[in-house]
Image (tube, rainbow, N blue to C red; front, side):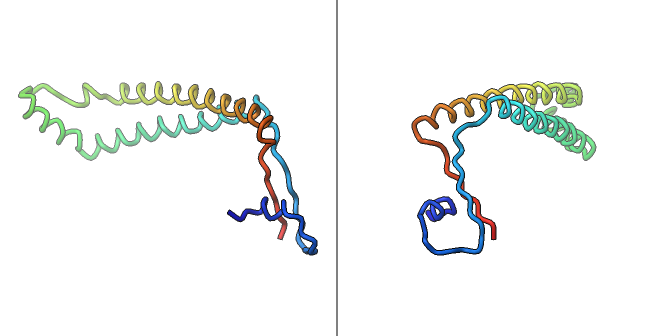
Length: 135
């Protein structure tokens, strides 16, 4: 494993024309992580809801639901069974919205816990060494 940070850690006496910086990440701000995680999961939640609704519309428009209805009517011997009544656009959209809200809450909480665990582990490990090089 040869990374820039390991190369910078070795004290070379040779002179290079590029500028090298070695930084150690020893603290992550809790509220910054919470805000960023919330925004990221909010965007992913919006994408989830929109994608779910678009997939439902495409499946309904192409007639795939109609083909499935025929198959289920033959299997269940129920001529009144319709997928649109069981899984309507409103029901699918509401389910996707509930899942998106749960993802936002759980993702934000997990990111907050991860930042707390990192801040606690820095006391034992000394932090994460990151090296940057300007070519």
